Image (cartoon, rainbow, N blue to C red):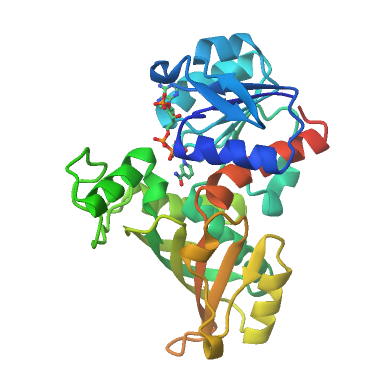
Length: 329
Ligand SMILES: NC(=O)c1ccc[n+]([C@@H]2O[C@H](COP(=O)([O-])OP(=O)(O)OC[C@H]3O[C@@H](n4cnc5c(N)ncnc54)[C@H](OP(=O)(O)O)[C@@H]3O)[C@@H](O)[C@H]2O)c1
């Protein structure tokens, strides 16, 4: 496989290279691609130096797969150019996710929808992926009616500039700001841009993407997305109302049986998911599983995952692995 990593110098790009190496993805030639600012820069992969190239050179090299993590504008402009030369693009940005002609894929849930004709495949938003990983097995069994989710999102979800802002604030250095306010010792109810309906774009991604992934518009999701000064992963407080009643033990069993999900739930030992432990792991962790005592058939839970791994890089590599395994590239 000739593989291009577009946005190789970024937060997600760096983790992608790590995940590709760890999982021994069958690469015969690796193209590291970034903006003109980084062209010529040297980066290691599996002990070998690679030189960063520009997008036009990468298209000319006609890779089999290009994994994009370089922002929506880059994807909108360049993914079709790769697709035209026969490359299959797996895109981490929000550019193609809600395009009805593109698949939005979490491999454990809907990889079977992919065909060789899918030349641009969308990776869902990081906070969506961890949410649907936990909702999917429960929805199959009890049928969701309504979900209310509040997120506690890591600065790593905004990219290199935001992690630097937090580090600068901790070190007392005046530097470039990724957010309109300080993020250290703060909580910003503002992830991505505000839309006309008063929600942020991140909140609307959480409301819409799960319906597309689960191919079901009969449930609704209402979201509040908050940025907090953590680095290891995103956390989510989730309230789900089902059509049918459930047993808590069965809920735990269904979650544990879901590939990629691990239940960490024991109040007696203070066991619950946290970003410091989810950091650098591929699993989605679920805990604080309890009945909402104010309403019938309603569950509360707490979901944590590393937004750079399952929320981005790992999910994109899993899609790529599926394409290779099924001979779709
Ligand atoms: N962080 C997350 O948790 C997360 C999760 C899911 C999806 N995503 C998505 O993944 C993408 C990257 O996010 P990130 O957090 O990794 O951002 P980041 O740290 O800011 O990195 C951005 C990357 O894109 C490259 N890039 C920027 N403009 C480019 C251009 N015009 N042409 C070619 N390359 C360009 C940058 O190259 P230079 O170094 O040369 O500037 C860098 O490699 C975004 O679309 C984001 O929405 C992020």
